[in-house]
Length: 297
Image 1 (cartoon, rainbow, N blue to C red):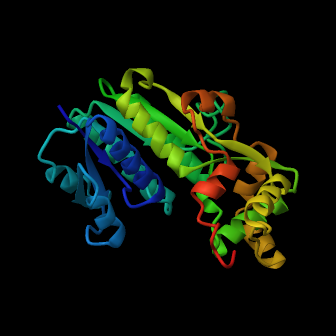
Image 2 (cartoon, one colour):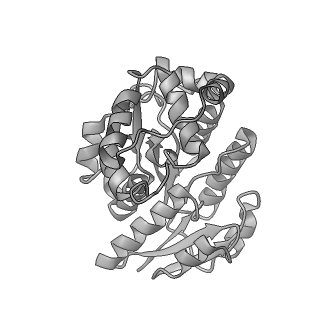
Image 3 (cartoon, rainbow, N blue to C red):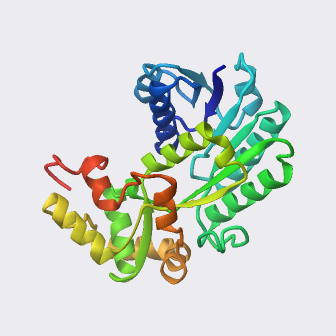
C-alpha cells in the first residue's frame, strides 16, 4: 500500500528536495504517493513537480490548515513540515497548528525541519538568542510534548550551501561571513541532502523514529570557502561592497555574532555514515550550484 506523504513548502528549496528524493526512491520501489503543497498550483515550479510520477499538487496555505486537510482524499501516513521564513510569530503558529492537525488525523510519521543550535549536545536545550531559531525550538518542543502516538523525526540543518548564489543575496551572505573573520569556521549543508535524509527517514522509518539529527556536509572558514570557489570556478567567492556588508552584518549582528562565537556543531563524520554521498561544499559547487557556466558571479 502506498504511503501518502504531504510535503509542505514543495516549491521551495527544502520541500522541493524532499519531493525529488521521494520520487527517486519510487523509481526503485514505489512506496509513496507524494502530495505537494503549494500556494499556486499554476506556477512553473508547481507544474514541474506535477509532471513527476506519483506527485499530486495540493493548493493551500499553512495559514488555513483545516482547508488543506479537507482536500485530502486518503489518510496521511506522513508529513514533512517546513515553514516559510519571515514573521517568527506566524512561523511558530503555522508549525504548531500543523502538528496539532497531524495528531488529530492520526498521521503516523511527522518529520520537522528545524535548525541546529550547537550540535547534539546543545540543540535540545539551547534556543539561542536568534529569533527564528527560537521559533523552531518552540515548534520542536510542542511537537515532542503533543505527538502522543504519532512518531516523529526532527532534522536540524546547519547553514545552507544553496544560500551562496550569484545574486545580491549570495554576495551579501558571503560578505557577512567574511566580516566574522576569514578564519572563523561555519558549517554548511546542501538542501539536496536535507531532502535525501528526509526520504531515507520515510523509507526506513524504524531507524529514524524519535531521532533529532543535526545535519552538515562540510565545515570551512571563509578563507577556505573562497579557495574552493577559486578552484572550481576560477573566480573568488561573490561579495558585495564593504559598506553594504558592514551594514547588513550590523542589522543581523545577533545571528552573525552567534555564528562567530558559538556556531553550528553537527557531527559531520556521523552525518556521512548516515547518508553516504553527502555533499561537501566543493561537490555542491560542481553538481548543484549552477555557478559553472555562469558568465558572471
